[in-house]
Amino acid sequence: MMRHPRDYEVWETFNLLHPRFANDPQNVRLGLAIAGFYPFGTMSTSYSICPVVLIPYNRPPWKCMKQTSSILSMIIPRKQMTGNNIDVYLQPLIK
Image (tube, rainbow, N blue to C red):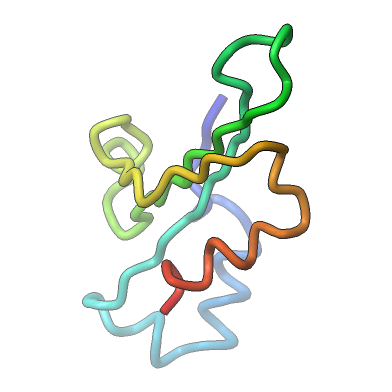
């Protein structure tokens, strides 16, 4: 079951630590989700694909958790799973 992060104490802690960011409604809060999988099944483990999805949390919970609100920002094809080397691929997205 998916829940909106606004329901958690971490959200409130972030607001207390960064009041200027929290008070400006134009600032965008994004959640990042990455899930790697093997496109050719388990028989062929030589290639993997990692879709990187962004979720805008500024929208109301009943809107932001829908599939239509998700933003597919990149797809990382690899010969092996990305593992700890994922930061190399995420640097352009962060910039």
